[in-house]
Amino acid sequence: MVVSSMQVFALLSVLCIMVAIVSFCMETLPAFDRPVCLNTTVDGGLTYFMRPNYQDPFFIVESV
Image 1: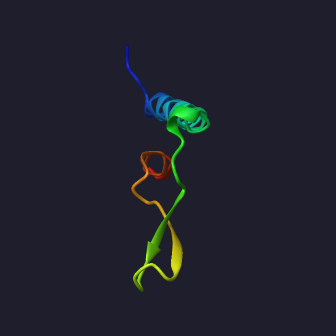
Image 2 (image 1 turned 180 degrees about the horizontal axis):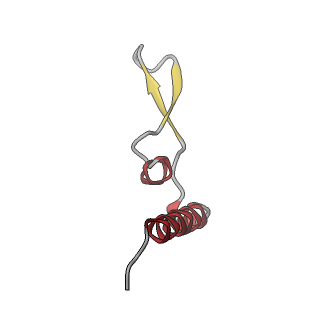
């Protein structure tokens, strides 16, 4: 049985879609609740800035 490049591409596409669906569903579970942004300060706590949490595993999986 010979596997064509179109079949490999189709399989990879389906796998990527499945990973995205599972990741999206897991993000909505309360057990995986986490801050989307992190509070950071540069002046000893007087001013806070919100910056995205780029180390979030869900963000990394969705970006890839």
